[in-house]
Image 1 (cartoon, rainbow, N blue to C red):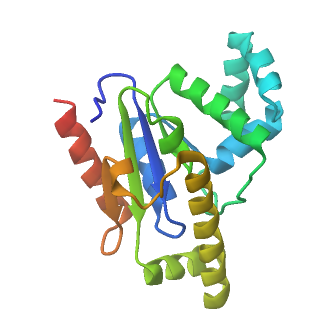
Image 2 (image 1 turned 30 degrees about the vertical axis):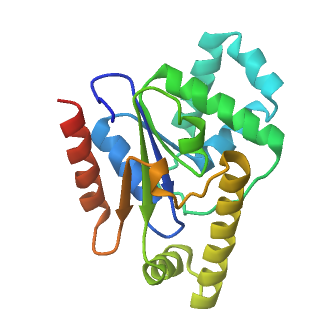
Length: 210
């Protein structure tokens, strides 16, 4: 359960082509907090260096560290990022991403969309974990439209990302991302608009925050 009246973090795990990234962005807007996803975090690690040592050196000067991150978001527009997943496996990059996400969450409430969010924040107080999924046909149609791919290429892309994300979760969390026990909310997007999904999530959050 999550109380929106206190500092919180919402994590969204999603299937490629389910619309989970857009749901996360809209949810962050509704909650009036910042939104972070894989593209944002990868951009930060490239901007500030991917090693944990570099991250820690900058964090030692916290005012400068956070001002630099804040300026990074002002200089980069992620509102129309096409859903994709590079499936980075470099352990050093993963550690740096984890450091960045923890620091971001310490600064204020946020919504984080990405394969490792529920894992990174699973023991964090006031954390809401969400899984967004959809039927394969719905996912194929969305990926074809958003990434301008043929049906065959869309299926290939989805299968590659599904395999990579599941392998990552099994390796790092010793579970499957399809286990509903990992989440507070599981939503199937078939028949729902992104706004419908946000309404459902907000209804749950509002009830928990009373």
